[in-house]
Length: 354
Image (cartoon, rainbow, N blue to C red; front, side, top):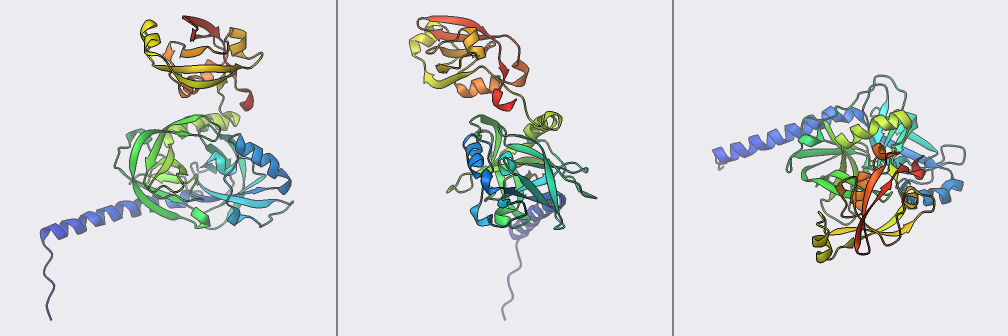
């Protein structure tokens, strides 16, 4: 019988490296798993039309019809599942807004298989984040990391409940940082983490963790039909949003009341007005009585700046219309015909979020 040849140094190094990789994954999973929960939502059948309207407006939950049919009572139907994780020992749970928005009842299943009804503390469709509260003893809170410290190529682990399969683990790397992703409300979410860790329906709201088991993101979306294209909201974004949700149940943002369209600018216009951008925001409608209307903004104006900041498109404008600008007079720079005009606009709170 021929004995196998002894492994050379290269083989030994490869095995050692694989073991180190495995140890990192196992450590990350064991660190976060006690905090990961399953989130089920219920909706009354007579709320379906309203729920569809909310989803069209960007606030509805993602429904998996394969989960439908069970009735928790009161005519409610269990219509969707997702994931989440406990982030404080007193029972605060972070998940996605699209998982729980519009639900008449939310049920959280803990790692020990015990279920609890959850209260919706607040949600922010613009960042696809929501905070729930449950009451249960001896909850394990996840350790929140620093998403700003992530590097492209870094190991990340996603834990969640795809298709209701609890505590499913997928592993990948950070494919890119600083991505932008359109939320269901139409706003652009910034600083999105792209990974190739496989996500499936039901993973939404679960944690994305680094090799130390620290949560660095909240899994939010995958591209259907795409391979290795998954996205997570950075945990640093969540840590900005969470205090507002705990305080008011929402995140306040400002608005000026216009309908817009991104347009390129002619090169001679850019040169003539010495603009910092080569595109702008065409005003296609102005809401009567809105801050823009009161400021004298007109259809056909092209916005190129707000409060001294360049505006190359509607996404720039959305980024600048933050809560701090509510009630504060701002200089809005527009191209009107052959002139560059500055009007003073005072943004108000977005009426949809009051």
